[in-house]
Structure formats: structure tokens, C-alpha cells
Image (cartoon, rainbow, N blue to C red; front, side, top):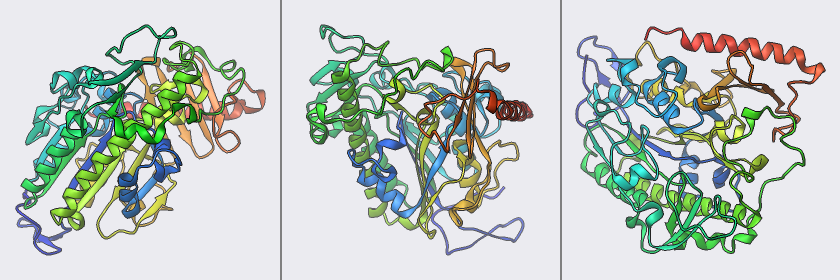
Length: 475
């Protein structure tokens, strides 16, 4: 096995063993946000929350409009795209590392490390608890052998000095600011470096300059906009007063045709959030996104200053999407598009910017980036090489996307026309079917409609086949 060494030498590298020419080895800069919905980004059409630094990556790369995670909360999703397996293949349906199941098979960053790359992560790439893990500064469910080095970015989170309010389960306003997976907004004192993401950006900048003369795979994990919605107070200014925030369209009786497992775990109702608190939640989320975007800008500035823009593949994404009041749902876990869909931008030097509407999965990043860097992907990977889409955005590699919500035993199959969701493998928990052409906001569940039973039957059969395929591996 040949190892790549030092900086690139021309446009071709000769393999010592085979004598064949190989494509140049790019650096990889993998930037991932936590709990980010694509609809909060201005490059995806948001007119209120401006994200100029993420937009700049999209201006140079391919922006995917139908990218889906494989698990709708962070543990299964991150274990999946880093291992190259679907959650049901590894059995990682919660918050653990996939190493016991994948054995000696390399994770994504490990594959590059094994081929001579410096591979490092800063903050959250595999699962890491937020806010608890960030306060403690620990490694979380990380896989040590995936990295040459790893760095954590502790921060104060909900304990940050400033003006804070607990929005969740606080109808009378008497609850103090609290920790945990709770909707809290903190307009914080101090600058960016007080907080985890500010420290993450600073360390990433340092590493880019330190390792600019060798190939690297650098994972930069930002924890915002995950709750608590905390950022330096300047980032809140564009969203004040919170009363000007616009909530999504509401439909009376929206939950009436939804099976019980399809009602999300966090709702306006069970969090007891009135309209004022809902609007403040949106404003706090946007401020957190704006703060995270500014940190992305610092990392990209370092890449530019180091002269590495034309030698580095840049990926920006999130581990899953997020509800901001659609259907009175909040946060992740649901299998609706707001939660299962993710922003995904891939920028490869020399390729033209584009927008791609074909289906892709986060699982596809491992084999795709390997191929782009001249590394043969391990044969076992369950993702697909989507690199042709970066040359032709009309290309199709997948006809549908597959995602799961393990805590709800939920399964999603999303194709061009239909979003089909079922709960339990025998559908005993109920089904949902949405016509994404006629009902893109997913208001009308057609699963019980007599005229759609043939579609339900077809999608249910296709989902069962997909699940069987996912489990048919040599682990």
C-alpha cells in the first residue's frame, strides 16, 4: 500500500507498485454543524438569517437540495457516515461508537490516515453530548483510532454570563436558566472565544497552518445551533425584537391523521411554549446559526491564507435537520423532511458550482471523497460514489433516500413523488404517506386513503427490501 507524502507534486502521482498514474490527493476539510436545518441558511433561501460564509462555500461548490441523513438524531447519524454503514447494519441506533461492530475496518478519517494523511478532529464529529459533554470537555463516544490527533473545545453553554431565559416548560416564567436538552436562549457576554465554537474555529485555523505542507483530513465539528441557543449578544441583534420572527404555517387538526409515534417528541404543546416563546426560540436559533457561520468564515479564511483553496475539498453539512415549529414540532427525531433532510455542500477545486436536486445520503460522503482523493474506497461500504454529480448535477445515483428514527422505530423511504414513513417493521405503529408534489409541507397523510393503497403497498414493499439490503452485510 503506497502512502501519500508531503505536498502534492504536480497533477499526477505515480504509484510505485503498479506504475499507474493516480489523481492528485486533495486535502479534506469536513465542516459539520449540529442540529442544523437547511431552511435556516440564506443559500437555501432563508431571507432572515444570513449565512454569508456558508453561502461562499456554496458559490464555489455543489449545493444538494435532496440530501438525507441516515438517523434523525446525532448518535446514529454520525456513527453511520463515519463508519460507512447504515445504523441497522452496525446496530448503532443510539449514542455509541460503531467500532465494536465494524472491527478492524477503517472509519472514513481512519482510511485517509492509513494512506498517509494527517487526520484530526476538533470538537464533535462522532457523538458528543451537548451541552453536558461540551461543559466537561470530554471525548464523548469518539473513536480514538480514527485520528492522528483530536481536540475538544469546552465552553460554558447555558451557564454563560448574560441574559438567559428557559423557554421550555416555563409558562409562568419562574424557572431559572437550566441545562440539558432544553430550549434555552442566552444572549451572552464576551466574545466568540468564550464559547466552544469560537475555540473550535481557532484550533482549526491553527491546525490548517501547522499542516499546510502535508495532506490532511480535518474534521471541524461546530455544536451550534444545538440547544442551548447561546451566542455572543451581537449575533442576536438582527433578530430583535423577537416578535418580528415569523412562525411556519399552522393547519387546524394537523395531528388528526398522524399515528401517535409520528407526533414529535418536542412540540409547542408539550413544551408549553406560547407564541412569544416560539418566536424567541426561532430568533435564538437563528442567532446561533449566525454565530456558527462566522466561525466557518474564520476556518475558510485560514484555508485561503494558507494557499490551500485549490488543493482542498470542502464539505459542509449537518448530522440531521431540525424543526422550527412546522406542524408545531420542534427539534429533531421526526422523519419529516425538516428533520431527515440536511444541508450538504461539496466544493471540489476545479469543478463548476452547481445545484443538484438528485437524492444523496450522508453515507455517500465516505466513498465519494475517497475516490476524489485517489483512494480506493473499502469494498464493504454501503454508501455510493456520487462524484459524477459534481460534474453533472442532473446525474442520478439513487432513486430514493432511506433514514431511520430508532427511538420511534420509524423508517423513511423518500422518492421523487412520495415520502413513506412507517413505525415498526410490521407497520404496527402506523404509517404516513405524503404526496411531495401536491403537498410538499406534508400536511395530509394519505396512508389510509383508499385510492392510495396501491402506492402504500408498493412503498411498503420497497422499504422492506431496502431494510433487508441494509442488513445484508458481512459484519
